[in-house]
Length: 174
Image (cartoon, rainbow, N blue to C red):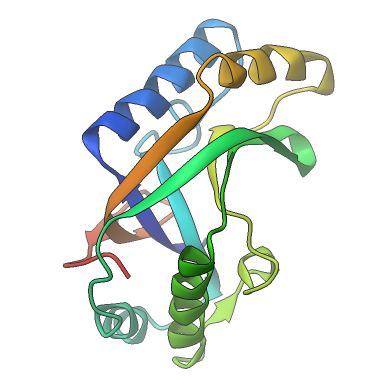
């Protein structure tokens, strides 16, 4: 069980990622469309919390205010352990600072942050697959490459309980 602070994509960007997921599913590659509870949305996670107090986390992110929409340039694919493949986003100085500020606000509540979301270790990404065997990686890389370069616009944010997909939208984009 985890709680994630996520940037959500605007309509155009959401459609682009969902179209990629659909193509991969047609090719027999699992994506967030069919993973676990089926309520996943295209997103870019600022932080994943392994332990937290719900109200404290909600208050912390509400206190971050609204930094406005963020654009993320995608130029390639990144492969994580266990066959997780994602769109590799750019980490501009402004985006990295916003992410670090969000993590520090959540940590100040006593939350435990997943190590891959620690400032300086975080890599902006949008998931393409949830687990694909190495032999099928060329299918994923080809599908992603067909859509690049791509600029994704994040115009909303939410806290998402990753276990069940419950989403609490925020009033701004931290």
